[in-house]
Image (cartoon, rainbow, N blue to C red; front, top):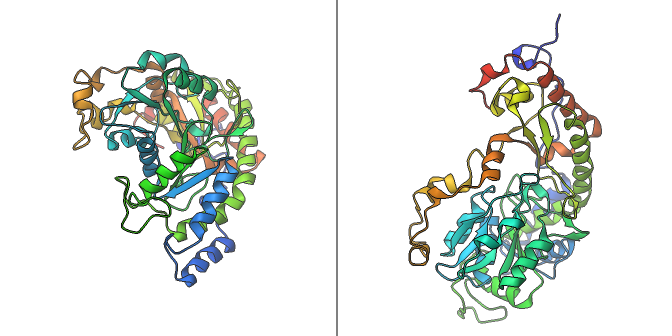
Length: 418
């Protein structure tokens, strides 16, 4: 019997599941029960949040950590602490989660989209200065998928123009740039602990910084504007209650113990996949090591797909075939952020600081070719898959090679989805 793709009724490359996420054991249960039985469930009278802030900041080589409700809040508070005023502009990439840009809008600022590097999907330093205006106040590089952005060049541009640098590290727990952990390379760094993240408590976030003043401002902003050590009804800033719970912090502290070993495993499996998938016609892994990125957290493993090598089959059909072979994957973002209705309609509601600042602004005219290409070509594999063995990675390569070898008729799956 001739070999057939699993999606056509053949035998899949693998039937064993890849590692599930999240990972938990009795230590996580004990951490949660410790908080439950203490009766101290909020940070105001507990110790877990402060303990986790210190531990995570130390792990990421930062002086200060301020734990908050989620990663979107950590970005918004970081932008506010950096001094953003209504109408000020913030440079962001368009290939990222909506929060990178919407946090700027929530701070009454104006996101300005600058294209990504086609080889890394990170913010392209070559294009930043052309986007700087007298209203620009900050740059938000995203360490996309866990690969550190070109921080030396971005920081040099920021210094020349007096701009703040806020690192979006939602994918980058444990990532390093030239041997240094990300998150405090710039002025502020924002991390997420949402369910899919490499370190998770379901929700949660943290702001990191080496700057004492910025740390104090972030603390006040997340604590209803109260200064550290101030009176209960003493409010210095327009902050809200963004405090993390003791349950979240206890769980994160337990999970943090595993993070280093998990990061080492992902970082070893990524190059193995690169080597194997690069040999499959029509597949190109993203580059790494171009700018001094020394450890990749691999929140996502991304390979670029060329339909011409698969008989014109669309990306969705390739992903559907890979899933049938036992490899969970899917297309990434389908459109750039500036094509989201939020931006095409400028549906900013009360957050309309852009109106007086940039009456000429029309996101419908924005074009970032590298981002638009990424939206057509990127196939994502989730971070938990990279916690598997070397043999598991070889199965991914074998599945991709099988799909490429037997791709005839795959274009008929145009409406399939992973």
